[in-house]
Length: 419
Image (cartoon, rainbow, N blue to C red; front, side):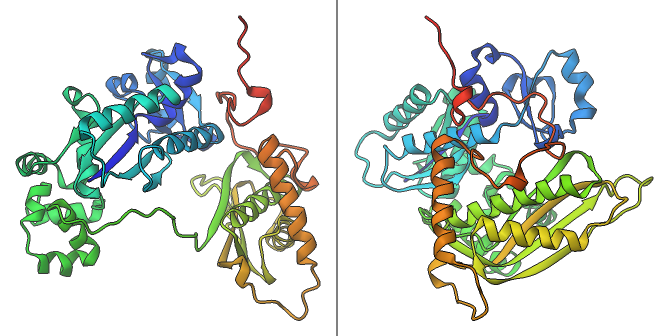
C-alpha cells in the first residue's frame, strides 16, 4: 500500500503557522513579483477567487472581501517543507518527496491498522509543524493520489481516505473525472473526452493496445495503476537535473548595464550552488534577457547567447565571470529589460569532469573556497557571503511588498516571545 500525504493550501498554511491571526480569514499568496494568485485559503476559494488569476484584475474583489494578501516567501516554504518531509520519514524508511508539499510513503509491512496509522501521521505533522495535511492510501501510487483527491474535497472523510476494497475503488473511479487523473494532462484529457472517455472508470475499460498506441507506455502504466497493478515504484533518490535555470522578472524595467550585471551575477551564483548541491558540473552556460513583449509601445529585444566553458565547473567564481562576459556581448542600451536569466546545461557528475589542456584555473583552490562559502551560508543564512558584484543596488529585485519574515531561515527574523 502507498500513501500520498499532501499539505492543505501549503503556502497559506505556512503563513498561518507564524501568524495565527490569519486563521479563518480569507488569505491568498502571490507569485513572483506579486503577479498572480498561486495559493488560496478555503475561505478565499469560497469567495470565488481563482487560482492563477492576475493580482491587478482581482484587486477590487480582494479589497471588497477583506482578503489578506501575502507575497510569496519561498525560503520559508522550502524550509517548512523540509521539516515536514523529515517528520514523514519517521513513519516509513521509503519516502518519495514528490513536490514541495507532497510525498509518497511506502506502507508495505505496516502491521498497524492503516486508518489509525494515517491519523497518527496527520496528528504528528500538525503537532510538529502546524500544517494540516490530507492523506490518501491505495494499492498503487495512482490510487493513493485518487484517494487523496477525495480526502481533501469531501469533508466527511476528515482528510483521510483508504481505497483498499474493490467496490470502494470502483465507486471512486466511476465519479473521478478523467482530467483529474494523475498523469493525464489537458491534451490527453481532451483527446479522451472526444472518444467518450469521461471518467477514470471509462479509461480503464479501454483495451491495453489502444491505450499504448494512442498514449504510449506512460498512458498504459497509468491505466494499470488505476486497476490496482503497481507500475510506478517510489523514486527515493530524485534524478539529477540535466539543466538548471535561474531567472526572474525585474521589480521594475531595467535599462542600465550595472543593475542587470548584479542580477546576472546573482543568477549565475545560484546556478553554481544548485550544481554543487547535486555534485555536478556544467559545460555550457547561456545568458538571456528580454523586454516586455506585451507592451506594443516599446521596442522589443530578446537576446540569448551560449558560452562554452573551458572545462566543466560548479564554481561561482567561474560561472559569474563568464556570465558577465556573455552579458556584455548581448546587452544593448536603450531597451527596457523586463526579465533576465542564466541557464547551465551539458551537466556531468563532478567526479567525471574531463580536464582541458589550456585550463589555467586552480580547481582545487576554487573547490575549497566554494565549500567554505556554502558552509557559511548554510550556518548563517542564504547570501550571507556572496561575491561583491552581487551586492549594492537592489533595484532589479522583484516586488515583494507583502512578504512575511523568514522566521526559520534568517536569524534576525526569529520570533521573539516575551513572557
